[in-house]
Length: 286
Image (tube, rainbow, N blue to C red; front, side, top):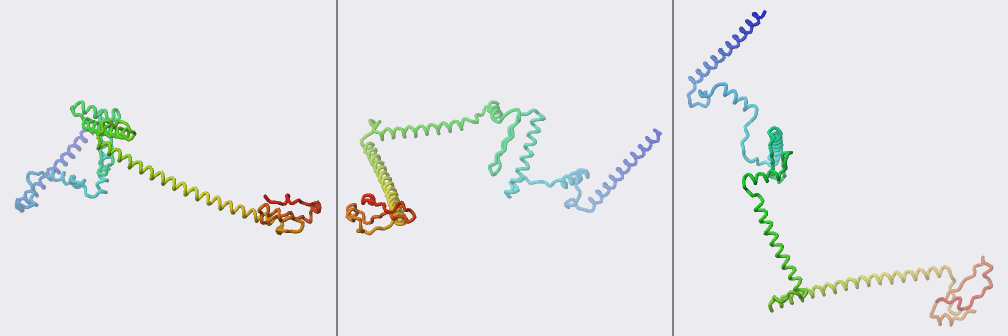
């Protein structure tokens, strides 16, 4: 049984080998025929330096993925999409490299729109990586920035010193170092400032005066309305009496400066009020 299986495998292998040999012969014959029919300068002539397997491999790769020309993508949308895809790929490769090789990585990227992306190994941070870079390479990354910050600080200190000096001079202090021209200039500046303050003061006073006048006018109008309502209520509740009625001395009303005098009218339903007399001082309005 084993001998038969071995014999069968040998026959299958021999058949496959023979088929490969026949295929190579056919390709070789076709290559020779094509070379004899086409001139060497023809673009369709086969290249003898390139094997059939190499051409087949290149054809397979070309069919799988087209070749991309490395240049700037003009379309902003396509450029952003490509950046997002490749950024994700770079981040993934950086993470794999950090895990597989125990490497310390720091990756910083800015897109064309200014969007910031960063990756750093879990075992370190960005500052530590750049500090190690400075130590190993001998390049100081912060010296230029530090010098710029120092220049800005010195400039701000000078401005602050000049402003404090000007404040002291406006308060009458630190005037010994000023000559006559500087003193006149300081005097003129203070006069101008005084005029501005005085004009502002008058404006505030005028505005407040107008506001108080409006409030007073509104209060007077409200007072007149209340007096009118009070008179209307008194007309409805009391009877009107002529200036010189019988049994009443009108001179009292004139003496009090009142042109209208009111008297109680007895209610017919209240018998207790009938026959009750009132003196003139009880009927006088203050």
